Length: 522
Image (tube, rainbow, N blue to C red):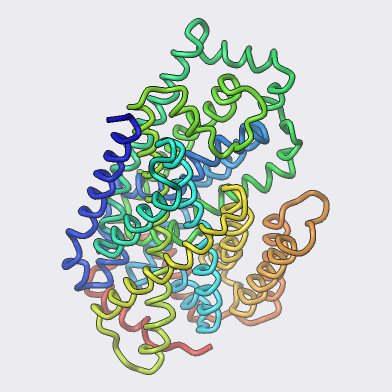
């Protein structure tokens, strides 16, 4: 049999393994929405590190980032500066984890709705997050489909590969929820790191045996068409300080308030987990990105030369045409690992928001009725299938570069909950009216500068939207009255727990959680 056939068999076996891993927990996770959406809040430090890191990386890191660096230069690496804001995951995440244990929060909407005592604001955030999860999930499927078709020489067509990835992602989540997602992410994290090391090592030793990466860099500098890749702001001038600022902010937003990362702040087993994350998460980001940047900035231009037409395919080309079949196969699995891990995490977030914060909240809780936990999980699973259909529409249209799905759509819109999130955790003056004003103005500016007119002075829509959002949030909060109850519950109470070094016991957790789920007024 040909190499492509063996690769196809390997992909199918790997897909079956992922499906089995998810579906074996189907009955267990059907009993409790807490188990399905938050893994019973018992994830250990290594698994939390792995699931958080690989969910941030996604197929964008393995597939899109090297292409963007090859296309626009080393300045694109600036987004890793934002990822070092993984420290913010610890600072913000620890406070959210305490609130999650005290009040039963599972989603970003849980916290924001309760902090600002507003059902309307919670509904607004729910719609925005679900709507812009779809293009980012689509990016994962597009990357998997493109790479699979290229790696197998078209024997496994794009649309078939996308269909396989869709089935794998959907039923892996439907079966095991957050437990399956988090533990599979740990395996994928190790697979991804190992693959990057093997690919970079092989290409370097094979094509630059005399001087390694130094030899590759010398070759790039000697070619005028390639030299711009290693310069700042790059061959297209895209990543000057203004473009880099946007990239840094995007990376920071992605590591803190993207919905699937936000939800991971609730699932840690204990506070010691966050101490481990404070050094391990930024280190993981920088370590993995080192190999990704080497591929995009050094190996790809030195081996492929200038003028690659489909830049999004450079990793697939390097791993199939310039490496042996085994490396081609594990590189494809690495892409599956990165893409599937992020897709299932985001879809699980959308499912949790749609089922808990829209359906259950408005159909049951606000009417004074209790929702059976099994029904919540059932509705979440049905919603997952519906969301996958919507995602496939975007995949079929395939309207932009892969990185555009993340940085021109999803990230700027997700970012508009950042000021209200941070302000709600640390600033006692933050008000419901301020949260509304900041988020709505931020969404308006993002929409305006993304779809209708070019943003002024060379700054991205994300920069302008966050600036306007913060000004509106702070300004309106200063002229409106904050809720003393909210300040005591969500800031003073958390400060006292942190300063005292204590945690709530499970009985009190349960009581406060049930009280918190009662209907709240606008």
